[in-house]
Image 1 (cartoon, rainbow, N blue to C red):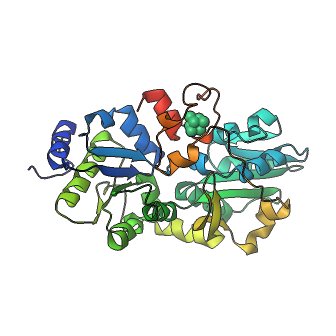
Image 2 (tube, rainbow, N blue to C red):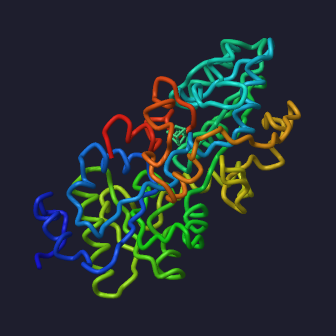
Image 3 (cartoon, rainbow, N blue to C red):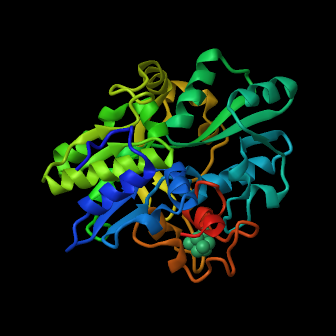
Length: 353
Ligand code: SF4
């Protein structure tokens, strides 16, 4: 067996994966990053895998897991005459029982980065400007940096920030999911550090490898996972070393926890998970749109026929949904997983499985 390093070609890595894969049992390897799922699907990687290797998309799309309650509150804010709602492009199209932000036709602006909201707030001093801030650790850190810079009096934050390790722990404990190994997300790891995933091998005996986004890097992660399984090891490895440090970005972490605290948050289709998200600390209530505008928690209504909840938990594939490609397409998404370029249904629709 050749040494499994970053110098190997895709062809060599596929060969190694076939040599290492068990013949007598299935191995379920979950990715928890929409960009990983994009690479896997776009490159046709599943077709290159041995029959026993299953590459499963997990909860890697922040748009897909943003609660319906938060989206409806954002819609209702955008319908106020005195308010402009700012958010990322994908969020404008997320369906709810009352439509999407865009279809409701309120006052909204699309932004691609938090600092753009500051400009909108400065240009509209007579309006409340609410930033609907969603995402994992990678978007929380820039939002915290924005608060650190100082924001105008008419700026508010509607947060729906999620944490990745906590949802992964939920998956590990769910026997229906049956994860054998994780490919840990490269982007999130730049913030939280590779060490954030140590709990999975050490507490749960699940091999975990941090990977980047090139097909070769992902193939290497899969090969290293299979080598661990073959040798009966469960360890944390990082094959994205040039970018991800063991301790992550300390400054970004400090800023995040200066403004936010860990709390139970609502994941769409899943419900509240303890310590799985970040909310503004009470001393910043004057910036918190939920507090300032007295926003209610709205009971979620399931979208008829949509199985996004099972897809983000790795319990079903997009093609298991009866609406996939029929009633539900990226042009006319019925559920959140078909909206975002990071959603499994959207990716599978565009590139096949
Ligand atoms: Fe939901 Fe559409 Fe995906 Fe079905 S295909 S799970 S309706 S997003």
